[in-house]
Length: 138
Image 1 (spheres, rainbow, N blue to C red):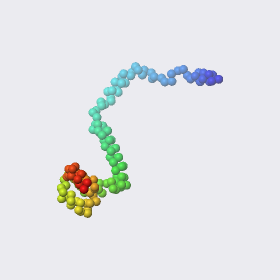
Image 2: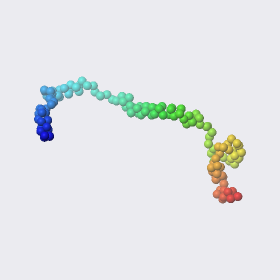
Image 3: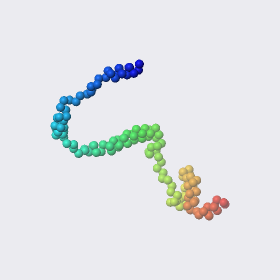
Image 4: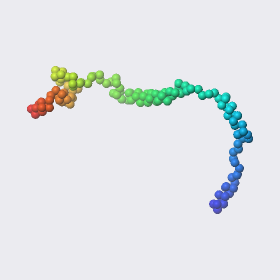
């Protein structure tokens, strides 16, 4: 039964080609091609915009990401903005002398900002290992 339906299907399909080439198409093809080449303007050098189009697109995408990410983040997390950061410079332990170090320890303002690790680093710079060992054991 199945073979009969398949044979019937294939027998109904026409045996002729479904598409035709226009008459004399290939005979005058060369003359039509020549005519098109003569009438079509020659390609000019690429313009400025065409040369820099990829770079302009990349810059625009960076700008878009900046606008869509940075500005909303600035308003959601105001502590991240540069305007709210403190302008106090970090203390360089190498530039301190003993008097500056004592002044920093004695002032109430700077006591909170000076960490124990910074004190140990300063002492390690100023004292030898032998002196540090003696000071820690006494």
